Structure formats: C-alpha cells, structure tokens
Length: 161
Image (tube, rainbow, N blue to C red; front, side, top):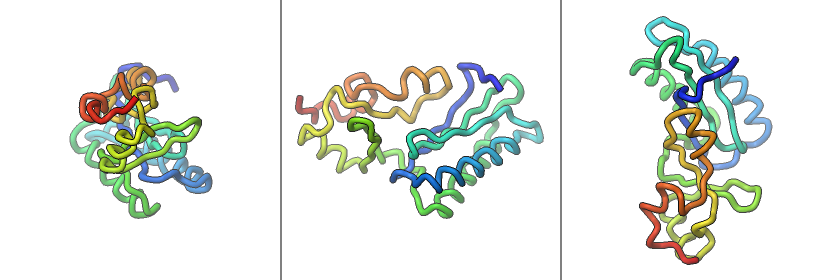
C-alpha cells in the first residue's frame, strides 16, 4: 500500500529500547490497530511501524478519510494501553532521543541538558524531531543534526563544541 508524502504521522518514543520479542508483539498489535482504525465509521488508510526498537509511528493517508478528533483520541488511548502493557512511557515529549554511533539513546530533559554541558551531545549529534507532521517530513526532517533541529533553539546555549 502506497502512502502520500502528505500522510499525517504521529511518533511515540519509548523511554527505553524495546526488546526484540516486544517489538515482534508490538508490530502485531500496531498492525491490528492500524487495520481497524476508523474515523466516524470510515476506515482510515493507516499503517504502523517501529524504528530502532524505540519509535512507534502511526501513519494516516487522509486522501481516503481524514483522522478526526475521536479517531486521534482512540489512538492516544491505544498508546496509553500499550504503555501499561509493556511498562514503557510513550507520551513524555521531554524524553529526548539522540544517536551515538549506531545506537539510539534517550534522556529526560535535565539529563539531556547535562549531556550538552559535558559535550557528550554536540551540534553534530543526530537528534530526533518527533514533532514532524507528515511522511515527507519524517523522511527528511526527523533525524537531523542538533544544530538543524528545534532542540538547538531550546538548548543551543548549552552546546559545548
């Protein structure tokens, strides 16, 4: 199934790396949700994926039917159930992800700030912009160097290069 670059995305970042067996089960659960997700009784053209054993991504191509407030509420409630089932936090927007080599790590805001002060995260460190709005942005603006991210606007004065 092909999705438009304008398809809406929602990214939920786990506060820890997921184990392979969890990812396998989550894939199944997410795919079931996406295949049954509706808005005002209209089937949404939706898909779900997991990246780096950490990011749960829901995608809706609104050319068929648009995601409405009630359908978005369904997805948030679904995500809250996943949090409880897997013992993870997916809704903390100040749990910030960054890459070290091939590994994706995350840290709460205060720890992220300390890593910046210590130079362990610098202007070239890849960070994740989970605020991207569509599939095109997911592919081009999600994984970016710190210096090119919204993180730089908020934490740029802490960078030690």
